[in-house]
Image (cartoon, rainbow, N blue to C red):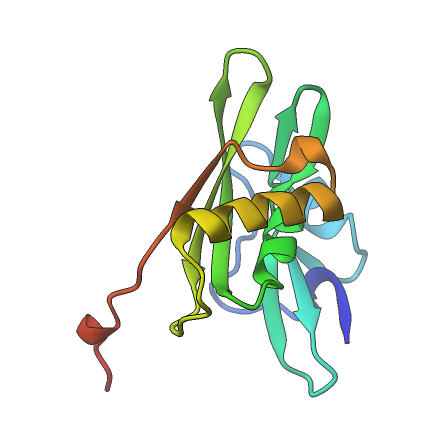
Length: 153
């Protein structure tokens, strides 16, 4: 089990090869951070069985009252909760803090005896304890998947 930056060792046909009018920026962004590898900008988690899970953009940062907070860091805490299937954190303009946070999450497809308000409050408290009080989201949105409309085949 290991987490880190997702880097690719060999070129593939559809990969980017430059940034229009700024090849130096392309080299600095994608090839310089990990020499010999293409840096995707994503974080990844590899299980002991060899499966990969993308954990989010490593450069996706929200600036809250002078504190730089990675969205993937908050999502990781939320995704470890037994009642959460997946989550996303986004920033929005905030008059006082500069940026605020909104958490949107999809609950597991099973009932754990949680009401939406109870689970939202529990997730805010979990983030406050695991990261910091300022990391707790201002808004929490519970999303629902419509599994009956899922197409297969």
